[in-house]
Length: 80
Image (tube, rainbow, N blue to C red; front, side):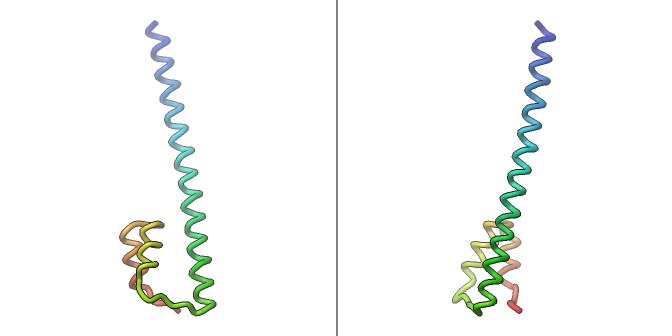
């Protein structure tokens, strides 16, 4: 009985680790897609010379992609 329990625990542990790795990969894919979309939007806005009345869009974009530090960085960034 003890061997069966140990085997079950081992299988469950492997499944949890595998699911964790899959979740990390999926998260990386979503992050990459978000960064690519942000770059596309910023490039299109630069081409059309769109300016924002406030930094609200940059704060929202920064928070969505990288947290507070990226949001604060994007507010202070100047466009080329």
